[in-house]
Image (cartoon, rainbow, N blue to C red; front, side, top):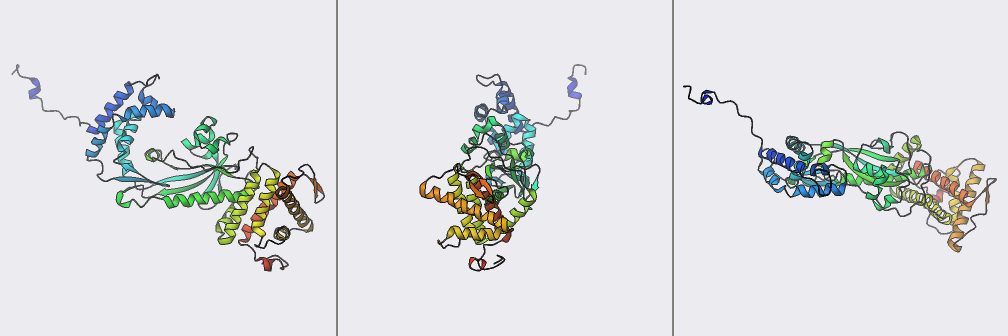
Length: 441
């Protein structure tokens, strides 16, 4: 018996569980690309993937991509994964997540963490029913010291309170401005100081091709338009000229963000009239902002369209470089709210109606009427002669004011008129208003 193999008499010991073929292949990728060095750089391919240099990271990923076809085949044959094509929803649409892009998700995460973690992560993502996130719209020209709930859905917060993201880093780090939109470079003098924020739950998050119509695009368009209206409405509070620097969507959970192909996407609009310098506006009056925003969002029909146009022209007046152009914009804003379509005596009607709506004692009414008269005088000179004497002061309510000071005060008057119209909720019936003592028609 002593000549026999002792192992033959030993009961067979339990076999260690064999790793899945997918995890084994991912493990081989980790070994290969941890050992492979980037050409001309003292770092591995894996280190380059997370180095923060987008160009270098892209080169590293191109090297990895050549080894991914076998991973695709293993995922397709792995019984742990679904057999249907799956989409991932986001606020602004949907994109295929499985199986076409699964190899990229799994390989990328595996190289950063481990094969086991990467597979477990993707399986969890594919079984997630819903996920929360936020839509952000960063603003120039609106300083806030703390969060303000503008309505039940949208708040405005200091830019410093936003969660870290690629988009935020572009906005707040001067070195990143060159990666942003063309309009961003024009404002490199000052990063945005605040952002509009709205929370949203995406459900279903993962869905099959049969449910492809569930994309969330309508929610994106609705929020985008609402943010635009709110930013426009804030023009009257100050007044100020808010500009949207960038808008984007991020899921709250980091694991969900990693699976969102649109996680780094952002939108921005071209700026038609660019301020010469960064104007300093007073901090936003929270109480007034809440009141005016909610009243503005309730406007409908002619009142909403006219008020929106008046706000837009006021904002353009505040951004104009030349005083004559400012006066033209202000006159259009005032006429939008007070004209009746009759071209006779327009400036007189604007002066009388605006003064009546704004109210106040005799001195206040006289001052407002004079400001409008002087604004129209500057407008007329600019339109009919192309120039006016910007150095000659005018007397308004006993004070000597330069044309620049007149237009600054006229802009505040215009903002007050817009707010009064928003509070009123409608455009007056002028034929009745003009003869009504209290101006309530």
